[in-house]
Image (cartoon, rainbow, N blue to C red):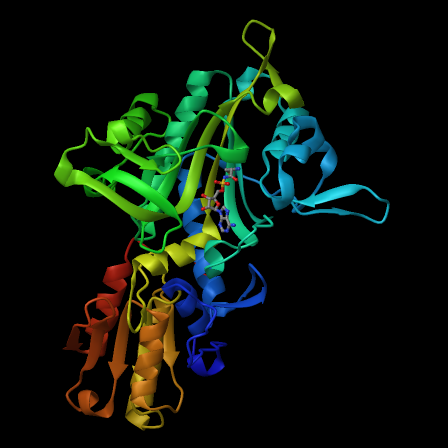
Length: 450
Ligand code: 5CA
């Protein structure tokens, strides 16, 4: 992409309404535009990161053997009356009527609808286990939408639902989701700690939330600092293996880590003094096991091995896809702007031409742009006739992890400069080596963008 042809409406001033850094930078970097309270348009840069995050989620869901579907945003009220949640859900559910006076709602989650799909098409235990998921817009009429995409009213969520014959199989699905989520967040450059939580309106006994530690987080959390030493890394795991998934769950959840909803002072006091931490966190996902809470009222049964009908055991598993943009920025920025982790960066590197219009500099930038693109990389080439200072400020604000700077002086010596956004360190090298360096950084970590 050439910046002269892109749509990057960068703001000079800090918008007064933005209270936290991720919201400020998303507005300033021209990623989103608020249209109503908690409702946003996604501008090209924001949309590109959203798609990258979404694609990582899809890739990791595929690895775990889960099957993507898409359910409607507008749902009829009848299914929700069957489960009893139409009346229970309260003011967060946005309700309306169509021209025939039929009750409709904007989906806040989809346990009922996915259970309806299941009961219509699956009748034998032989078709289990099955996990269906979608990434779809949700609406919750939050009483206090705030912090930009962190607590929106309209937001983008991955919601997955497992169907299993037995409680044991459903708990395996729970563990499998926990493992796949650990991988998913790490690929985005995040540490998200599973913490025992409360199940709220989804229901059920077993639930963990995934929290990214950040001072601006909305949840108060209590944990043993040893949990922050755990990383999943690139271990190979067999998602069908109950033992392997369970072992990972135990590794990541045996140390004390709870949100304020389930915090237990007595248990917390058993953690050695020097490792006891109280902090704030951003909830970027939650997994639930709730057994037959929806399958019983909705009649989602299968014929078991003995021929008798049994209600399936279920759980649901969510990732806050749009919230993740805010969480990643909260975890990775400095006073100049965003610092995207390589896994989700909208463009792999920036190319800054210090002297647009200089024949040699223009030709060198074009050549870099073509070589990087030919390797499947996406550079953002700042080809505007702007001062170098302004170009650097824009690059720093939008946070591309790598920048190649090209100017007549360096070119005289046959070199360009490669700079890391994270460390600020620069290295001079030939354009060929610069391309090889950037390609090497992203090797094996390419995520499709838009
Ligand atoms: N049906 C279940 C799991 S699929 C469910 O709805 N779970 S949830 O309520 O915990 O939502 C899943 C994730 O969506 C949360 O962990 C959070 O990251 C994100 N989320 C929830 N509410 C909002 C909101 N108002 N704005 C942005 N993200 C949200």
